[in-house]
Image (cartoon, rainbow, N blue to C red; front, side, top):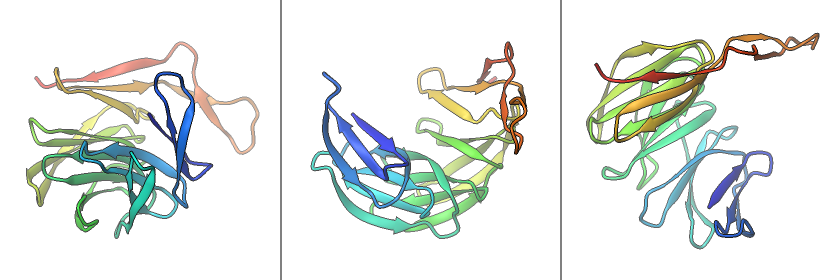
Amino acid sequence: MLVCHEDAAAITALDPDNGEIVGRIDLGGGPEAAVVNGKGTGFVNLEAAAMVVSFDPQRLAVKQKWPIPGCKAPVPLAIDISNSRLFIGCRSKVLAVMDADNGKVITTLPIGDTVDAVVFDPDNKMIFASNGEGTVSVIRQKSANAYESVGSIRTQKGAKTMAFDPKTKRLFLSAAEMEPAGKATPVQMQPKPGTFGVLVIERQ
């Protein structure tokens, strides 16, 4: 089991049977989302450095570090294993598509503000990016190197944490109304009690 530690700029490997630490990968920057390709390589975003790191999850070693041109603050990450493509959600309001074999950015597409999750549906060739502004940006994969934006789904402001069920093709987003947190300065927001819910998005 691999755990990303942004403050420690590392990935920690845990034994899933007993929870003991078995190793660590020092990344040289704070990691965000990570994925593996099932073929001996993992990938992780470094948010502040705007880079993708490829690593060996067995040897716990860094392989390559690739910059992400046109992207600032990469946070979520998804993978198309069959085509070896990475889908990188950038807080600069773009989705970057990267060749996972060589780190080349193939294209970038516009998405909403404050992206926090990206998922890929390999059956329908669709990419979904959930944004804190209250939208899910939808992108169609026409081929491994061709993509098009097909619009957005209105959700709820702050609904940016998302999960995908590959069987039902449903998207699930956590959401709550927000309110000021006491007298904190600057003003900080917190969930309003009794307003938490899960939004479900499905095809009609």
